[in-house]
Image 1 (cartoon, rainbow, N blue to C red):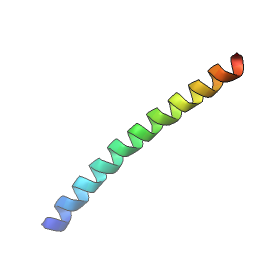
Image 2 (cartoon, rainbow, N blue to C red):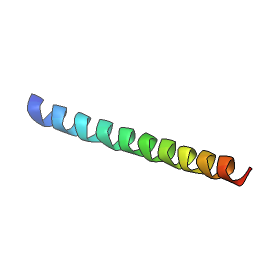
Image 3 (cartoon, one colour):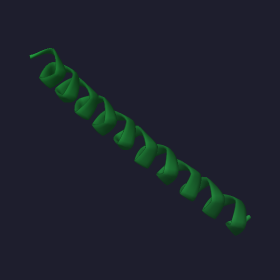
Image 4 (cartoon, helix red, strand yellow):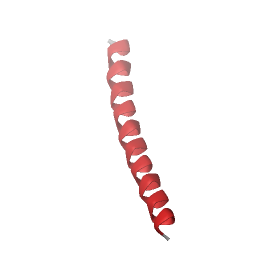
Length: 38
Protein backbone atom coordinates (compact mmCIF):
# COMPACT_ATOMS: atom_id res chain seq x y z
CA UNK A 1 0.00 0.00 0.00
CA UNK A 2 2.77 2.44 0.89
CA UNK A 3 4.55 1.85 -2.41
CA UNK A 4 1.38 2.59 -4.38
CA UNK A 5 0.86 5.85 -2.45
CA UNK A 6 4.46 6.87 -3.13
CA UNK A 7 3.98 6.09 -6.83
CA UNK A 8 0.87 8.33 -7.04
CA UNK A 9 2.63 11.11 -5.11
CA UNK A 10 5.74 11.01 -7.31
CA UNK A 11 3.69 10.88 -10.52
CA UNK A 12 1.76 14.01 -9.49
CA UNK A 13 4.99 15.68 -8.38
CA UNK A 14 6.63 14.99 -11.74
CA UNK A 15 3.54 16.30 -13.57
CA UNK A 16 3.68 19.61 -11.68
CA UNK A 17 7.45 19.87 -12.19
CA UNK A 18 7.08 19.23 -15.93
CA UNK A 19 4.36 21.91 -16.16
CA UNK A 20 6.61 24.45 -14.42
CA UNK A 21 9.53 23.46 -16.65
CA UNK A 22 7.39 24.03 -19.77
CA UNK A 23 6.34 27.45 -18.45
CA UNK A 24 9.97 28.37 -17.73
CA UNK A 25 11.05 27.26 -21.22
CA UNK A 26 8.28 29.36 -22.78
CA UNK A 27 9.38 32.42 -20.79
CA UNK A 28 13.01 31.90 -21.84
CA UNK A 29 11.89 31.51 -25.46
CA UNK A 30 9.92 34.77 -25.39
CA UNK A 31 12.77 36.59 -23.63
CA UNK A 32 15.26 35.46 -26.28
CA UNK A 33 12.91 36.64 -29.05
CA UNK A 34 12.50 40.04 -27.38
CA UNK A 35 16.29 40.44 -27.08
CA UNK A 36 16.77 39.49 -30.74
CA UNK A 37 14.12 41.98 -31.94
CA UNK A 38 15.86 44.91 -30.20
